[in-house]
Length: 273
Image: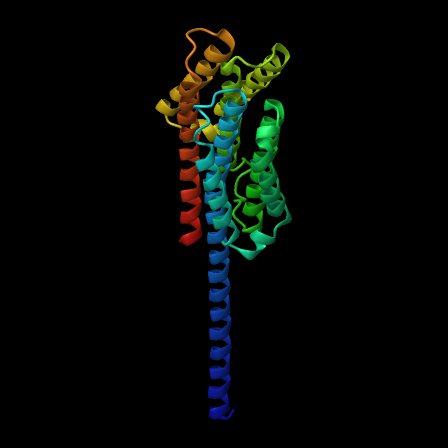
């Protein structure tokens, strides 16, 4: 065999191999970049959920006549708009997502009309908005390939996000009940939902994802939250102000969201290594 042809064949083979490796590296970098955008959306989504939950609590306070507790509403609306703007510029797929567009339209309507609503309608509309956001966060995890497949267990961050919403609903309804302006039927409806949520919260806290992630002190503080809500909204003993109730519930929710943030940080580490 002619030696120049052998050499040329080897050079072509090496060039082809190098091109293939370069293509694989480029694809891997693009995949990591896409996943990083997904993690950023999960981080930003949590912040937006938290702010809408606060808006729910304070708007219910306003509708229940607790005007002092509602002074934060203009500021939180500005934060929500800023959150939405930041999320929309992260990726074209997300900005054009029909569910996201539905969420922004829902918020535009809710934020301008909530003062005309009943407490029950205001609460329901906020809950629908948060539920849509949680579904979209889950959709983002799928689209950006962030869900792990090595375990049959639910992703821990998903459970923490859901747990935070259950606690947020208890916080919002508590503002109504502590105002003592709700009619008997409406108050009973709110207490039934709070009671249902407290049962689910206790069940979630006993699940492996929570028991393995939360420390002893965190578990004790969350158990204290359940007992505190029970005492304030059902036992009606040594009742605190609506403002204090909101702060206690917010502190307990923050414990859960800190765990969510830790799980997302672990996810970020997996993406960037």
